[in-house]
Length: 121
Length: 106
Image 1 (cartoon, one colour):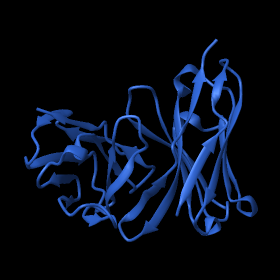
Image 2 (cartoon, one colour; image 1 turned 90 degrees about the vertical axis):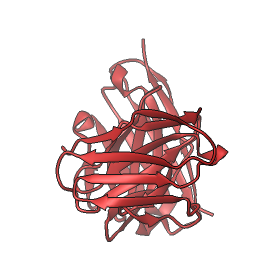
Image 3 (cartoon, chains in turn green, orange; image 1 turned 60 degrees about the horizontal axis):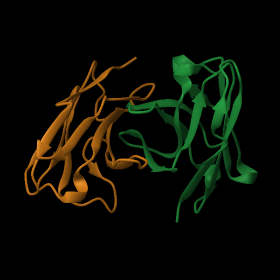
Image 4 (spheres, rainbow over the protein chains, first blue to last red; image 1 turned 180 degrees about the horizontal axis):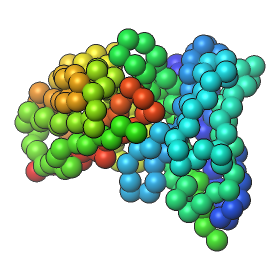
């Protein structure tokens, strides 16, 4: 059974940093692209970043470029999101998700339960 | 960036109703379109990928169609567990989601 478990969320002051983790199990982690998606309270979904299975490609939404870094450790079956210079608008539930890449593009086939990040003084 | 719009933003329906949700992209995205369902307090779950492919395990009452800029998600006979918010998402370029369509009980 595919499982994705996020951790590392919490309350942080504006300008602060936080590192989110996503522990993957039940599949061959090193062969899948992975994504982070966030959802501000009461709002819709926003894709944040993704990373190729070997870590050689990374992509970000414009609003987090230069502040967030996605990474992975395939030996530990783990995905990470380092978040620096946090702002109030980064407050959201952050989900990690496993991608399916194929004909018709990519899709987010499995999701974790999410971890809440609150940026406030 | 490719902008996604959905209509309606919300709808009220009864169990057994046929429900159609429309998604439009700001430019052609071929069939690079996915649909997700999100129940309150839960993570999203994929229903349809590549515009019309039903994800394994998803009930056949869900179907997707369209290509280019206009897409449709149809629920042929609404069930109690289908009351949720539905999002479309394009993967043609940097992924973007539509604003969502909330389906609630009439």
